[in-house]
Image (cartoon, rainbow, N blue to C red; front, side, top):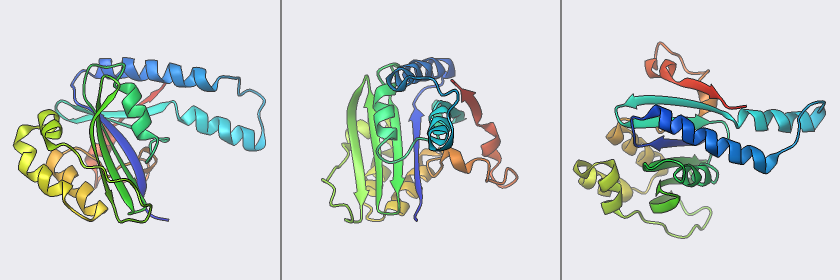
Length: 201
């Protein structure tokens, strides 16, 4: 199996606003699933634990004005839905990044519950519809000084190369998943210890 991850970034320094928005999103998600998990055994207990972990977030501001969010459920196809939904509850741009098996990489930029622009890099395995980002929207929210480099990254063919280049450009961790945090050597990756765990169960 290849590498899979998803993460989300709110372009703001207001951590409290991000936490408040996440709580509202989490409350809505919990209402949609509902039901008590007490007394469950076997497979039902496993599903209940997975649901509980879905309500745990890891948050950090490693770059001023960028709050990064991790969650065990974030992956290609889910982080986009949550990012779009989160953008309804906070008046700031939300960037989602996802990666699937070296076959697909995707970024999307949301605001006020709507997709502003997005981009997919794909090796053709899944015959996805073409999706090319509007660089004017990206540079407006990520930084106008990034325009030339963003154009270069968007035209890359390799998924891994594109996400790695975007990570280096933005100086925020994109090649990351919440499940990897414990396995990372804090001596080698000092920034890992700055992630704060927030449990909304």
